[in-house]
Amino acid sequence: MSAELAPTDLYPSRVGEAPRWLDRRDPVVHGAAGDGPLSADLLTSYQAQGFLTSPLMFSEAELAPVQAELERLGRDPAVAAMPETITEPDSRALRSIFAVHVHNPVLRALCHHPRLVGVARQLLGGEVYLHQSRINFKPGFAGRSFDWHSDFETWHVEDGMPRMRAVSCAISLTENATYNGPLMVIPGSHRRFLACVGETPAEHFKQSLKRQAYGVPDRESLAQLVREGGITTLTGPAGTVTFFECNLMHGSNSNISPLPRHNVFMVFNSVENTLVDPYCGLAPRPPYIAERARAEPIPYRPERGAGP
Ligand code: 6CS
Ligand code: FE
Image 1 (cartoon, rainbow, N blue to C red):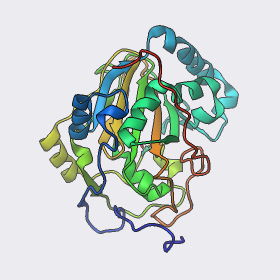
Image 2: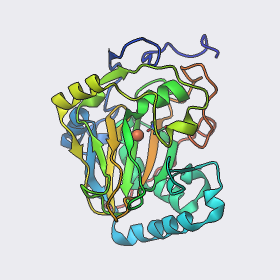
Image 3: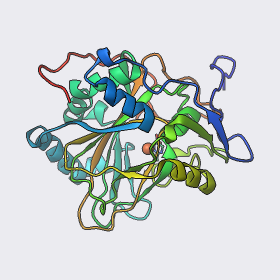
């Protein structure tokens, strides 16, 4: 790795013998109240909690074409064979399809939707591009869990994202109920960085996207975060939009209910925070997991009359 070219590693992880808390060196909110659709109160809440849910929604009519596209993709054998498609660790059920904003026009339109881009620009303080996008399927009976993690820990170590200036957006395409494996977050956990233990193996993504083993917090640190912040379960009807900060600790349970939980995720990153060589010293992950070449700003024109 050309370490001399990369900026100093402000968040070293997977390098020590024991887990370690490091100070957050970046703001949580990079823009201001006048810069976009979110009020000062919503920005203050995001700053403290690390997430915002339902400040805006997608209607049933807006969602219908996306839901139809998900059905179609889920059935297409050509899609099942793509490298972007990840199956569950214990079955051939679909778990994720990556880079949907690149290869699918319907999903691309959703990922570029001004309602979302306006919020991302405000939270990140300027122009944004998509670092990653994916559909996370969680079919009834077969959908498996996602262990607790901070996305930023992985993006920093494995992708070379230098600073905490990214935000994830989750849009639920089915109802997310308490019983079908909804997203769970630890409020306030984004305000510190937990350096994890373990050395990243080569091509870790082949395993981690099914079941993550490196870059996951130790039990003691996790218990401490939950003592301080509790756990919030993000339930809501189809169309619910959640923004969560890149360093917020989150995870989800398996879906043993008969009812599917399908979400679309996209990750907005500031154009001032583009990727450098991965801090773990290994080869970068494929571009369908972490975009490094196409970091042009998403064109933005505000929706007329929109606002949370
Ligand atoms: O690898 C990624 O980019 C995302 N997926 C997992 C399972 N963990 C980290 C991050 O959210
Ligand atoms: Fe995640």
